[in-house]
Length: 79
Image (tube, rainbow, N blue to C red):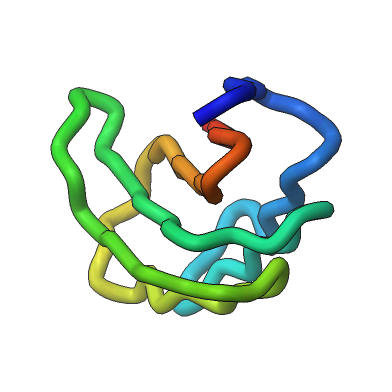
């Protein structure tokens, strides 16, 4: 991973708050998306090959989560 970007303009997550699905759009193609609880527990992990992903979050209770999206050259993190 070459760059680590936190709360940047290269990653867009909506709707926020989300009930059933969350859309993840990035300015670069992503290879992996992970969602963590605020205490660091991995809850969702998906392998992708696109810059536009729809993730089912209907099993997650209301709360704050950390989304980690990565490809070979960048790591993007949003809270």
